[in-house]
Length: 218
Image (cartoon, rainbow, N blue to C red; front, side, top):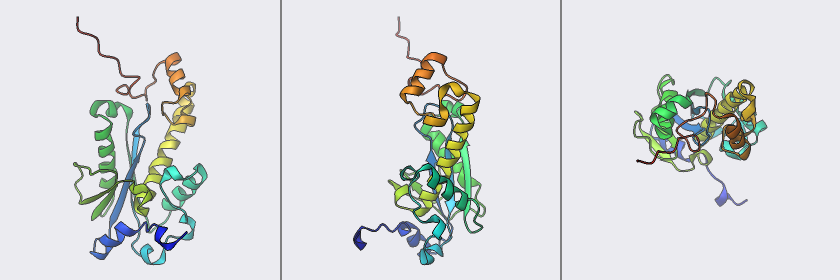
């Protein structure tokens, strides 16, 4: 691979660190699309010195969680959550709240809840995707940011692993749906289970095909 094709995944952080904003948080979510379970958000602040030293060897290969296998995500999760120089927070919004306020607002609420746990608070936030209007911090939205920023990639791993573990727990409570396998997404197996058993308490009633069709006016 040529040098021109190498992605600098500290590109956005470096600009902010150079301006004296040392506490830069990456934030990302997992679980916007499934028919069941919570949406989970994570916020991560990586140490600025890593821009000079590079990532620790045990984080080599850190990337968008969707580009990693289960083993890699679990390893990175363990490293990120046990290092003294990494600060992180995780928050979730349950299915019942998603039904009340819609998935976009629930996602933003989870992101804000994760950021609110960071002490001291971040000086700037790198957001995966589009700008979050309700966020009380200066922010930089980055499309596909989980593949372009190590801070966001770290947040994506924490959010994904946390949610996957929750869905495995729910699988033990409601084994008929196969949550451990599909994580609540609308697979053929999941839809068949819904057809046979109906929804359980963690299903999102506002999502099709769970959402009742509007009755035609007489």
